[in-house]
Image (cartoon, rainbow, N blue to C red; front, top):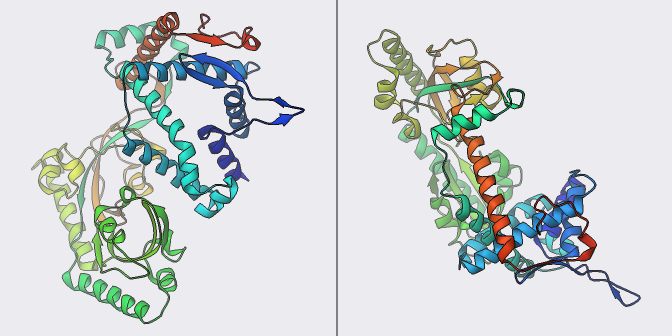
Amino acid sequence: MNRILIIISFLVTVVNVNLYSQAKGVVIDEIVAVVGNKTILKSDIENQKLQMETQNYYSGKNVRCNILEELLFQKLLLNQAVIDSIEVSEKEVNSEIDRRLRYFISQIGSEKKLEEFYNKSIPEIKAEFRVLIRDQLLTQRMQSQLTGDLKVTPSEVKNFYNKLPKDSLPLVNSEIELNQIVKYPKIKNSEILAVKEKLQNFKERINNGESFKTLAALYSEDPQSAAKGGEIGFVSRGDLVPEFAAVAFNLKGKEVSRIVKTEFGYHIIQLIERKGELINVRHILLKPKVSPLELRRAYTMLDSLKKYIVNDSISFKEAAWRFSDDVATKANGGLMQNNQTGSSKFEIDQLDPSVYNAIKDLKVNDISEPFKTFDDKGNDMYKIVQLKSKTKPHKASLKEDYNLIQDMALAEKNQKFIDDWILEKQKSTYIKINDNYKNCDFKYGSW
């Protein structure tokens, strides 16, 4: 049921659903507002209201007025984008259409189910999306152009902070910063050859009539696709790592590919179906095994390195630069980045369990024992981690949370700029609103 609600929400929001209906010769849809030469229909408002209801979002008794004002703002941006000759490419539009379709196909189960639900083919659905998605991209680009160059100075951040009522300062959870040194155990050539021989054997068995789907379910080391017989679902070229995409998109019929090496391991691939720029394939992934001896060597190397750092024979920063195998962090002293926020600070529940267990009893500047974990590709690795900093839960302060206060100050400055821009553009843009909405309590009253 939740999936169906999501699909309904998507369709009523992204597609101009035709709500025209004849009842005793009366058309129920109508133009509610005009901004420049852009119109807002009653159905636009009702569709967004329906979406909010399906998501249990409540916006007060004036929900239709609130939706209308937001649509007026969007049309104002779109109208200005046209005036300023802002453009988006066909490639950008197609990419966004494909991205949204892939998401909702994954939610509803298959392209066929989406086509059945909407009673249109995928190309027909794409055609309906095109104008609306182009408008959305233009609107986003226009807003980005308006505020993209805005900055806040340190004095503006300080003034913003000083003006904030102390009881409205956000509560910041305990946060930590971590440095790491990573070591990947070496993989023997014999292990790589064993994996290739196994995949070659699978390929021969498939060519002799065995089921790729069955072999993938039994042997593939990609657990997500193995549960579906190796099938990964419809994807575009940009969704795949380059080495995999180069081979997958050149497959014909039901042929089985050569062995393909990627950062995830070694694969063989079979094409299931192609639709335009999307393909559905199944694959078998095998990863060369790391020997216990190599794992021990990685552990021992990091254990020795930790002792050198503790004895001040080398700094953690220099050790990370000279010995860490993690390219992303070695150049900045091993400082780990939080992929969820883009900053170097982590809340406890944002840490991988293996990292949390290693650092939970550390004090600032302490270094963990070497511990075994996995990277985001599922590859074995050992690491040591240094607790660089740790804060207690507290009200946001300028000293400890400057970046957070800076973001808040910039958001306020952006909003003030947009508010002023709206008021100015209202004076020079043709705007007409249906009398049925004349009693709306708009934020920008001069609509």
